[in-house]
Image 1: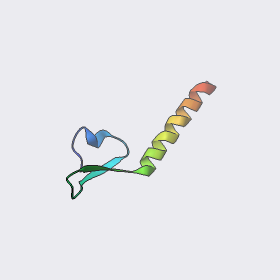
Image 2: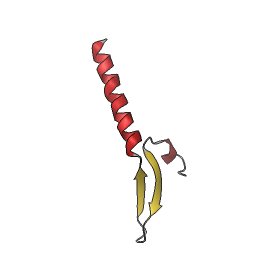
Image 3: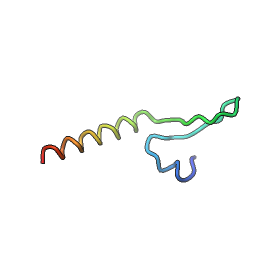
Length: 49
C-alpha cells in the first residue's frame, strides 16, 4: 500500500522498485479513464445549465 499523500491520488494503485533501484508507479487505467469521463460529463452538464 501507498502512504500519504500518494494513497489519495486516483488511479495510482502502487509502486515497485526495479533492479536498477528506480521507482516505478503502477497506474490503474480503468480508474484514470473513469475519472476523465466523469470530468468530461461534469463539464458537459455545466454547459447545458
